[in-house]
Amino acid sequence: MSGTPVLELRGLEAGYGSVPVVRPLDLVVPAGTVLAVLGPNGAGKTTLMMTLAGLLPRLRGDVLVDGEPTPSSRPAATNRAGLVLVADDRALFTTLSVRENIGIAARSGGPTLDEILDLFPALRPRLDAAAGALSGGEQQMLAMARGLVQRPHVLLVDELSMGLAPVIVEDLLPVVRRVADETGAVVVLVEQHVRLALEIADRAIVLVHGDVVLRGEAAELAASPAKLEAAYLGATA
Image 1 (cartoon, rainbow, N blue to C red):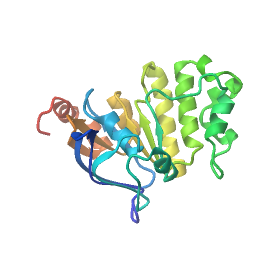
Image 2: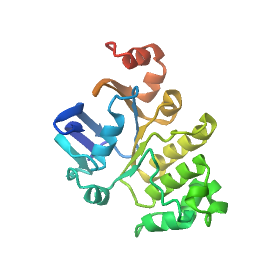
Image 3: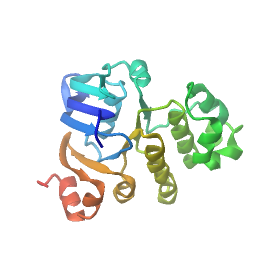
Image 4: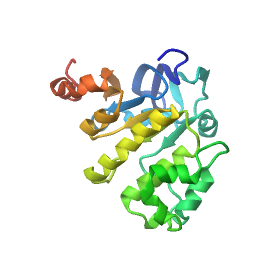
């Protein structure tokens, strides 16, 4: 696609204190792209997502959304700029109902409740149930729904499959694809189910010890399992 990328990272370093966990990262991601961020545990994936969301300060570099720089370590301002995080712990208000959780996050001009429920029909009969009473799959749907009503330009989905059976993940991941296709948002997806993630992603990067050791079109990486395995093991790709 031509024109201004929706998400651009320029020399981004992320970490804790002065210690980098993710080393200089450059990315240009156009509208409607699902970018899978893959890698073994401890690779820096969640650190990257928290930094993009403004929950951790950047050590160096810039993050741009629609060509505009976003602030470092200011989560509310970053959220208003269009970067919306669906965290791995889902961060739901467990004593509030499904309807209330969605309503609290909703923004003017965002999708309606009916539009959200079209994406997650399993939530329709559960609207008045407390979020804490939902199954793991339903809670993940609610976390995604709450992210989407904020009208994200970039939706950051960290470990969608956390604690879920693979069959539920198989149902949820196509919704990620649909969100990118129908809204034009960029979706950055951290996911341990590599095959499933590559099936719905456009592009992918593999992080190992904070370095991007492999990047490319998702379909090409899916067709090269040996190259993926070598990247995960830290071998030269």
